[in-house]
Image 1 (cartoon, rainbow, N blue to C red):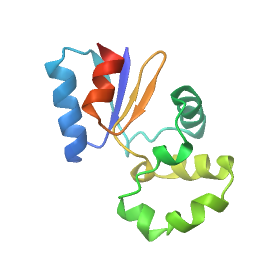
Image 2 (cartoon, helix red, strand yellow):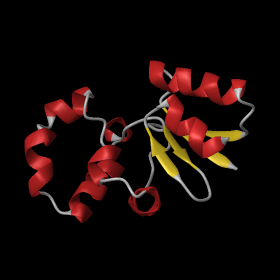
Image 3 (cartoon, rainbow, N blue to C red):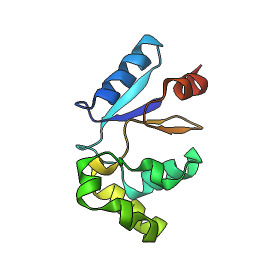
Image 4 (cartoon, rainbow, N blue to C red):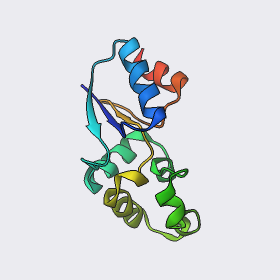
Length: 117
């Protein structure tokens, strides 16, 4: 089963969910704020994804800008970054799509099509 981690009010998440439904992909939904991923989950997803950890941050979010993370992240350890992500769902790039052998952040239709078809 594929896990779809979303913020329901996010237009990108809505577009991604519509795409999943249209492509008949079965998935389980999870609200990123009400059920924020734990540090352990984030670490596992990060390792499985092969992506740089920065790709897990919602760089266009207000919280990211408020905390001035653009300047702070490079000096932080991986451990500190994971703790920060686990502290607030609004810091996490969304949607996050977690499959058995892949993790995708954000919605890029081409990328999702390649992984799911």
